Length: 206
Image (tube, rainbow, N blue to C red):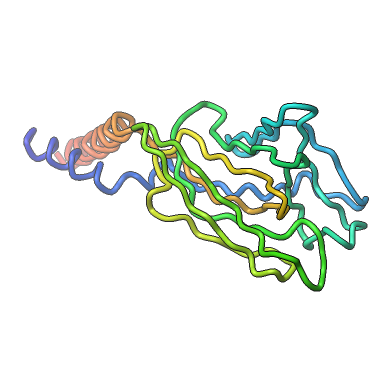
């Protein structure tokens, strides 16, 4: 009986990564406004994640509002308001996470852009490995969804630059990655509850 319980617990951990690991979509809707421009400051937190602007002098994030016809995408989107400013994404508790997708848009509305915006994301994983992926916007103003490769998991942090082909970002889809030890304890707890429930049922039948 004990062998069966242990086997069940171990097998359960294979299916548990989705348990307790709920995807967060950072949509910045708390920053929505009807004015033209809103300065946010150097940090922004949402759903257990923090974005930091590491630009040297007066680092700021900002959001276009509904009155900004030249930059508003129809949704509250954040942008690094510093040329060559670096944006860093991490969890507030410094746990690891996976990055699934992000929406990107040109920063300013225009019928024709001189060059396509290219945004390169660099991630540092908890094993020290560095991963990188670049996305190229289509030169048409508006949000586009870009998906990250499977390498963007077990991340400690992800960073990217606000280069001269300026961009804004929205709907960051990120998921905390549970630690294996936590998954095992969770599995043991489920088995214990199920086992106790079975004993109670058996006792009532007697």
